[in-house]
Length: 329
Length: 206
Image (cartoon, rainbow over all chains, first blue to last red; front, side, top):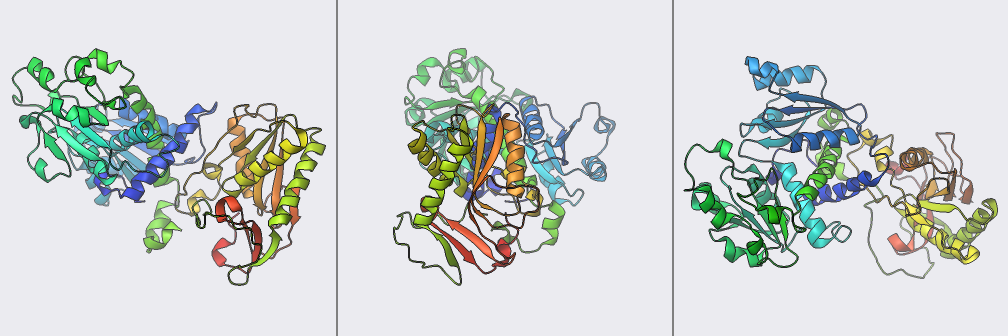
């Protein structure tokens, strides 16, 4: 296991399966009367959110508190950042306070990588979404949800997602969730198909380890999971499609389309959903839609990631020990 | 890290021949382990006056198999089904930060719960007592048993905490440089307890 979690592409299959297996045990803590473990007692985790978020921030905070870490919340609004402080100065302030881990969300792609590799700070860095780049914990919780539903809770332990067909639909261009999911699902052996209007596909998508299609109806019958993505209007500065009605007619998921999916197939959405746009209320409220389950699984996944990054040997001790190859035993 | 060690030879072999590596010497063989578990089961019934409210919780990995075997024996004796579960103590260990993160094992509390019941913790080797300390902490977060007792297959001494076992399969005086290795058919393909000379890394594990 590495020291930071910056990109889903950095994870090997063994790492990813290990995180999913750990999360499966973490999920059982939620069923107990006392939903708390003493594991990260005395460790300080800062949630550094430069961009708005409800789900991810609350999910991380719940995970940190369940592991007994001390949590400091930071949002750019109402902080010195609005006065013009740079990321470097913010980081050095945190370092001076003796922080053990930083969970960072930033509008600029690459900010978590910069924070982790610049030497400004010694803490473990967890990427909670950076620009249009990566959102690794989201991809992990999606994979966790798929494994639980498609393979089984106990049957899934130690398993990957080999042979599962996953379709991602919508605004691929602006979606860090899509990038993370393509990377992780490919690592786990799933077959990924992206479906979007050509204007919402990024340049170079041909080199990604996935298929691309413009026709949702043709892909649906051969999907084990369909993930609908939100059209990110806040990141759009040009006309990507003629009207919303046309978009949702061709790329939205309604009851009729859902009926064409195989009986066991899941409907997923990373949230927040825009009902009537990419997904109809009928589908969003159906049994097959895992949105709420994904949120619950998010806490388990984040507990697993924090435990694996922080729960073991002291970071500084790990740094001075040069041979990482022998650490596994 | 015994949670991940050897998942080899799935076929349990009946042979009791000590094909042990190096200098490891068997101190308990399959039939001895079976007899010892039978005795402990009887002791539990005797002490608990019928074992009516007993819950067995094994500590992974091998404690769980021992708990299951004990549960079967208790059922033979009392005729009633005894709830058996497992209690993973990894997250409660006091040496977490001295090693890379460990893999977690399953915590499985029987549906009956543990509140107001007599919980018997089951582990393979009692050594420093730190595992049991962690188990007591873990129990605390799950419920409030009427009482907690401890059953171990081997007590090798060298306690670092004021903890003792209520039921002991075999007292095995050892030096700190020796290793005690328990192998069970469910995990290792055969039943045996091996006493070996020091393989330095094992020292202080338990």
